[in-house]
Figure (cartoon, rainbow, N blue to C red):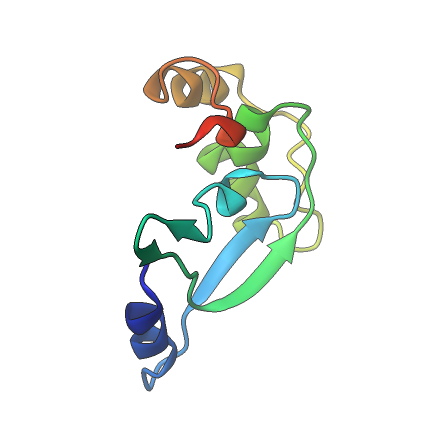
Length: 102
């Protein structure tokens, strides 16, 4: 998101939120500067911590984020699905490495 878009979203009459797993590297993946576009998150950050032992596991929408949204008092999913992480990895062309984003 550009700074202007983020400022407009943050200025809306209704609140917006972004859920962040502190163990997930992906929210930090878009470099703060990509060429001439400056990336900026918007929304009030709400974080949780759930370590699944891999980049894919920590970023899993089903196992990490979906579970945490439903189970706010205990956001770690004790039974993560190996299928969800495999789908994430396949969709990203193998194992995702945010440190290699150009």
